[in-house]
Structure formats: C-alpha cells, structure tokens
Amino acid sequence: MMAWERKQRVFVSVASEAAIEQLDELMWQFPAGRFLPHTRSDAADASKAPVNIGTLSGLKPAEVVINLCPEAIPQPSRFKRILEIVPFVKSEREASRAKYRTYSNLGLSPELHEMNK
Image (cartoon, rainbow, N blue to C red; front, side, top):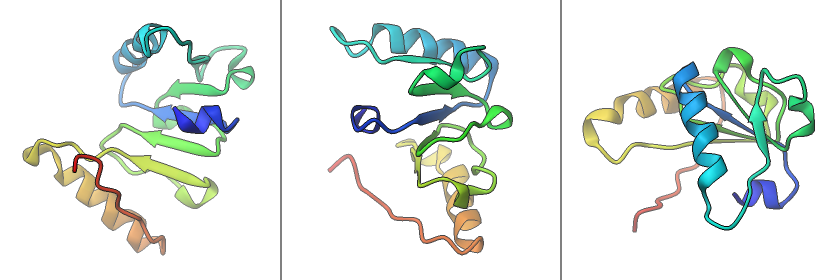
C-alpha cells in the first residue's frame, strides 16, 4: 500500500461488519512476508494505527480513503484523496457510475486510472 509507505493515514471503508472482519484477516496474511499495521476504526487505539478499517458511519480523518462501499463518501472534499475501486464485472459497475456522478455534482473532478491494461 503506497500511501502507508508514504506515511499517509489511510481509511478503508467497507459495507458491513462482516467485511471489516474479512479485510482485517486478509491484512494479517497479505502481502506475504510483510505486515500492514492496521486496526478497526472503532478500536480504542485506532488513532495510533496508520490504516483503519471501518464503515462509512465510522469514517475517520485520513489523507487517503479507499472506498469499497457501493455508496459515495459523504462530504468527500474533506479528504485529500479518495480511491474508488470499479468492479471488473460489468453488472456491478452501476454503483461506481452513481458515485462518479455524485462526486461530479459536488463540484469535484474525479480522475480515472485504468489498472488492467
């Protein structure tokens, strides 16, 4: 995770408690041979960890927000960067299109970066 390596605070937003648990477990296992210091955003020591995992309702201040939810980040202008992952599966892309429209309607200029070339 390049943002963490650059000493930036990261918040990973997921849709549910189950997704928090799943991502927490994955971050303990991957990448192999490395540890990504993280915690749940509702943990008592969450402010000490450079990477927090939580839902949109528990969104904490961060330089980078990675949004894995189908909803747009509320009040997105308060963050330096928001990364939205657009699903490869065509039928799952409508939520990403809606988020793009939401951000555009708020006066932001989303940038697109093709990752699977």
